[in-house]
Image (cartoon, rainbow, N blue to C red; front, side, top):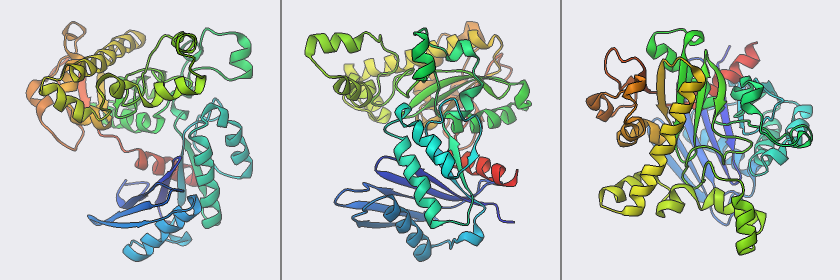
Length: 397
């Protein structure tokens, strides 16, 4: 039986795809279709180290997926229903209804539709991607893997906001958390790197990219995470503010007359590193900082400080900590950020080995000294493989 899985990630105007083995993680091809619905779209199909690019108008998600399938026909590898075990879909928000990946049918699509108010920018595109794939691959199992599912193990006191009961019961306002597929993958591989069973491993995992979050993970189960009802809460991000006094909304409305939508847009798209320094790319921030840019220096310091606060808080939540784990583009590649975020934590048993930290590499590695009380790890994430693995598990199960 085949273990090939086509992984799809449908965004608001893009479609990313990967074809890989759900058991080994070996990737055969990947690609993306950008600017769907605009005058000129771009498809990039990567296979065997070669990148094939096509530019034309892509009308909608069905056109995007058909374009991807034509790229497979032209450039390889060949795929059809007989060679696929499943199509795995990233779905952003599963609310409190889904703690595991699920096989997709019309009833499930209606349920995800009902969750759109919790993720109005993401779930509609995710559902459209599901519907299109079901039409084009009617004989292949479709599996939804939810970003929020991993965090459904949080205890009630961790996910509950101190707001009126009707908000919590009728409007489902609570902490959900995101980046769940990344945390599932990274926590399992971090335990392997430590030579421990995942069930006996306590971790603080820092997923640091343009979107950033932290999680306290005990025995492979999330017990707290920094993102909340939406991905806006928590760490400083590329364009998102992270933690903020909720009264800022009312203040800006009173003082500037801004609408809720204007404030929401500013906090999600014009804040974070961009709001602090003018650049949302962390590499650009560090370059400007090295050149003496004071705004970039402040942005770097705020970012690192917020990470350090969460490390300390989640250490307290866990009680016993075996490792701090960095993942995501920034977490994996910025030795400078890792050093700044963990600086001054020696009293907690957290130290970095400067040479190990400065050494680059694409593999999972230890960057703390031998014999450290708390290990510090860098574990590159692989969300596509995790989605494929979970999708295959549903089909085989």
